[in-house]
Length: 345
Length: 295
Image 1 (cartoon, one colour):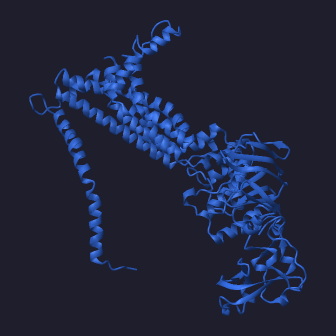
Image 2 (tube, one colour):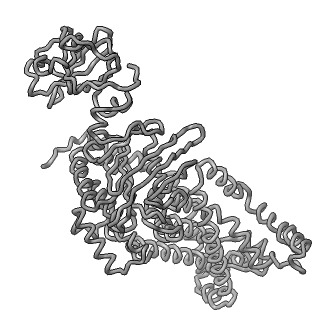
Image 3 (cartoon, chains in turn red, orange):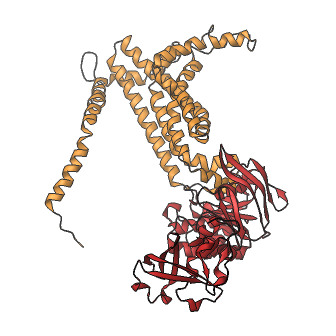
């Protein structure tokens, strides 16, 4: 299957005074798995629906390969879509649902059936072909939706929070399966989610969106370790944004006068585990919580700012005995201290 | 595992059930009094001569009369004609209402419902004003030169049908609109994303999923229009005679309670037959999942 690159060129969309998409540009390579990540109302679903053809942009261009699809009807775009609520046809059984796009293309009946069955096997739903959609579990419905979106071999696949209705364990299984399916088919995929872990696990690249704009596009690792804005830093995990004045170098050298981002899990309680070029933060222990794999400590710095410190349970022998109100120091290695350009703490 | 039931709690549950059941009693009483008793009385009447003796003569007289059968045909023609036009006009209208923004839909819906707030007699005479030879519509048609002669729009089958459709359309629309509004918009989007044209979306998604509403609307239209009296009486001009006008004539002109009762029973049987047929058709449809390969 030949998959295609996607170009989103300065697309804007407003609903009255509410700007859903604010001059969004984005290039997605052929065969790439790109995630649009952001809180609700950030414009990620609007952008996906614009690509699908269900939202008409106010301005800008959408290209599929070399072809301008901005004004193309949704049914001519040849894009597979998995909807948040699956959108399975309740009046058709599993096989009829999956064979539906083939039937629309006048595929001979026997061939359509055979291809639908093969696709069902691919998403591990063998034997459920004759089942009524209403009789399926959430995970099975998700797989039917997936099968239906890929059975007609579209050039691009769009997924709108497809796993948000599933429970945690199933969601994690499906994350790996969707990614494996993508790798097998090599189909350009745009995936929308508000779950940063899901985005990190699944994506080649992540585009973090907020208030209709793309804040940052990069690999999961760089988005996590080197966020370009305070919003990205805080959205991607437990981030501490600290003013330059509240940090000192362990070896006493000068600290750069920039706003810094240090993730909660970057801290150690033992200075020996951090090099001399690392930083130290001093404060009073306000609260502590045991979270299974780690302890979360809340430190109040002298300036009043609270900092979250996450210590792996394996290294946190003494955490259980720490009493609130005691003064302590947390250390972070230099490699984990990231200056956020232009951000004010 | 068995659970021992506390008799006091079981009694509470029983009392609760009885209370809710008792709420239906006033309505049941009225329905029983106002519907079942008269029907029983009509059945009895249909077997009595004017003198009060038992007879099957009423049936023989009514069923052997050609007038009865032509009235039956007229009744069916009017009902099915009304239904067909309601489906043809109402289904697209319901689809339009279901696709526009809710605010707009509410305004349009108010217009559709407006006729329901007017008494049927007023509306029927209103149509008379519009449809007469010298009425507004014919005046406009001949005045603008579209037709040389006024069209025969009233005091005939056409006029009766117009009046009946006008009355039935909102009642047909309501269940169809409700069914279409409940269709998940994402189903339509999903079908489109897989390549379905508007026509294919209609045929494979919207129509099958609103079939329940269309059936309900059809039952309402048929049951009402089988017994329609005022509209054929006024707009039919004596030339359109369904069973209802025959019943009226048997009573007011001939004081023939026996024949009128037989005609009334005929009407009841007709309604029951249509009801059973529609329900059977609906069940048949529900058991066949739509085959996508006919898309």
